[in-house]
Length: 179
Image 1: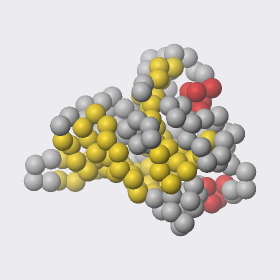
Image 2: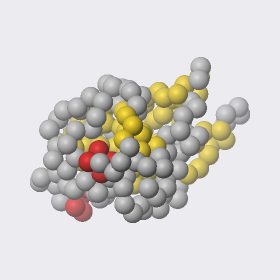
Image 3: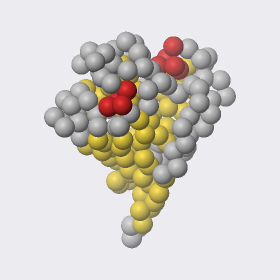
């Protein structure tokens, strides 16, 4: 599902995509015999605040990697692996595309494919599929302190849902830009 957000609204702020960005320099390509696969680093973010009971130092130690692992039948399989997430915490992955005014956003791979739970050490790995030719500009991994994924929208940011990782999308349009 695609959500068009025409102005800087609470939803735009919800995923922490408005304001200054940190540089995300790690974009690389792994050479395969037939296909070039893109890999990007996901960095810790705290634009939506911190969940109650979690220290900023602990939260900001999270990191991850997203990579295209295959492309078949006009679909790309994306694998996300992370470390330092909330142990056994519920997370969702979102695609975000900047527009001239506002942004588009949606659940990566649809729901419930965009949901995953970190293991007891906070190290998850998940895979989902999206259209191979897309205009997604960035990826956001959001933690759900209320243990609910909230479907097609991320939930109330800064209250029950908190972005923890973000970076460029590992696909054709993936790039971070100021909005």
